[in-house]
Image 1 (tube, rainbow, N blue to C red):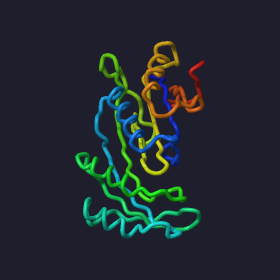
Image 2: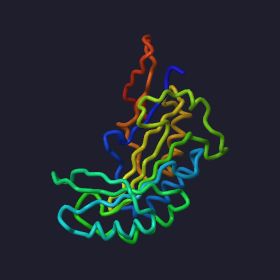
Image 3: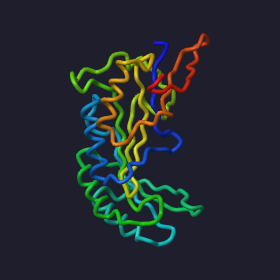
Image 4: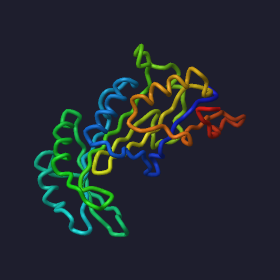
Length: 224
């Protein structure tokens, strides 16, 4: 393989993501799950996390929420600190088993009060890693295992969904196609029909192997 195409919308490694706008948490999850089932070779997320954030302004009682979550998901969550509007805040994170997702999702829905801060008060995040398949035949597109992994922090291909007051979706898609030709355009249009966000024309790249065996990218659009 000396060429392939990627879509990075928006960079997962830099914290960017597509906003899911006015979609509810339930709709955001169901739309994403439908896409995963119809177009990929996986079914369940490889990583699920429940996170509770502290409020720097005291808008909610994070400690009380943490105690409730600890009774359901374990007494020893991972602890961390971050910054929100230049104020340091604490957060607590639980790794959730796939068969406990429904329970965790209900907990987030029941405790996700409306607040002004960007993070929190509570969120559930899911990471799916997969290969693409035809939604018509169910066959996995060939040569996806030949696509190089350009960044150890993200695998080919993946979706990272965060469900909260402001739900977001980060995507890294890698396709074993050399050009944005008619056949690939049909596949992209089919994917778009089930995605909960719109592809950005600015986020497509074509990667080519140089004479020095380095992967060089250039921006490419659906209209090239």
